[in-house]
Image 1 (cartoon, rainbow, N blue to C red):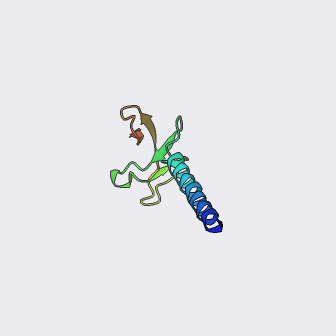
Image 2: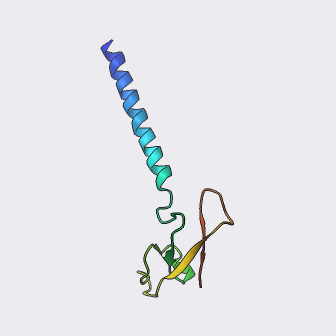
Image 3: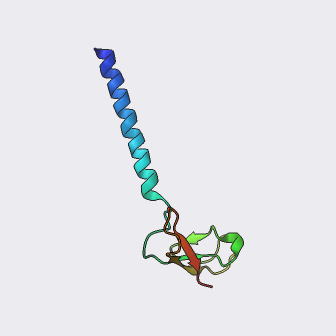
Length: 85
């Protein structure tokens, strides 16, 4: 009886842990991709991965970041942003 209870508790703990991982993974998504926000990126195509929620300079090349806005062209899992250049 004790072994069944131990196995049950281990299975329950594993299930709760996996559920927590799934919730945290799907809720964060792209942390910069919040709806309605304004974001900034480097104007150089090579630095398109540089995205900030504040204006400033690109950490890779030092250029001023430019605004980018969300487009509704792609409504799939990944949100699409268009650069305002």
